[in-house]
Length: 102
Image (cartoon, rainbow, N blue to C red):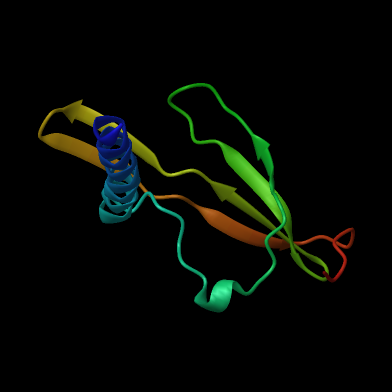
């Protein structure tokens, strides 16, 4: 019985630490979600339009009364193991009378 309990504890630690490592992996590469102080702010989902591979996807949502944001995904193109090209995401905010205050 002790062997089963010890194995369960080890498996739990491996899973817990594995999750931490992957979050750190994404944060170091600028792929993690940006932190929001106090977890405050509007958090509704955006509409996402997928484009074929090789093109950035597009997301849009209302970001305030009369304002709509459009953003593309960041694109990483790897030429070889040591040569990586990063094309930054683009964002724009436009007037949209259909957007109401949150």
